[in-house]
Image (cartoon, rainbow, N blue to C red; front, side, top):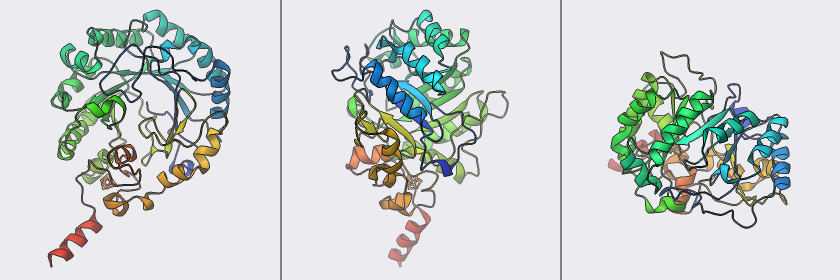
Length: 370
Ligand code: SF4
């Protein structure tokens, strides 16, 4: 979910996350193949209570600059006190988004209630252009139709929508068809997520590094021609791809009135503009980077973000290893720290799925040739 802070700059990274993801529950009635959380039907033991969740919200609101707060899951609609927490966050001055799962809980009435409580944006997952692809992904038949219905509810309520799509071998050939399907949905943003092999996602085959470049080419085309903005998640090398072609990775469509001032600045990544707290209060640099940096309420999320050595290391691209550490794009791209961790066990390692050879690396190779 992208932020609305157009004036947030790299100077703010050290003190404030731009996006704060709080996994309000692990409970979810779906069993998606690529689920980061490996969600389950019932709430997990140790889930933060209503009072604990409220005090977490208060702490989030106490960052020098208030981040945008995203309630994620599991399925946030499984949490009975959801609207109470939303109202609390709004009263604390936070801008709020929600990522509901496509289950029978996602009714028009439920959307109306969260809207009235103060939600302004929804993140809705669409993982295939048709029921066969999408339902197979999400492990439930009827899921595609329900997702289309959720998009319709959101439109009727004038809720901003970001559609999230996870790219894997199963749907990589559907990029253009997905982009065209979304054209009619009046969405604000298409966020294209590239698989990080954690949680259930480990079962699913991710695309080859060379294929990213082909997908980036199509995304860059759609970013310029569709009425919604396009961004990648856990594939920051899309920024490098666009910059190499003289483009602006933050540019929106040319021919629409869609708001684009909500784009995050370049150089935001896990631990640097992004932070995550799990359903039991574990503090991570991101949901896809499960390196525990403390536990709320014993530990302060503000201290963890500003001072924890893992966060500090993630914010220093000069400490990155391999190609990312010498790459001229490391301050705007940096590679997916989550994928580096999932694949190598070291979050400072090079992005495993980038084919780019940095200029410095080229010099080394040509010296070796001599
Ligand atoms: S080598 Fe690393 S920093 Fe450079 S473009 Fe690739 S992922 Fe980004």
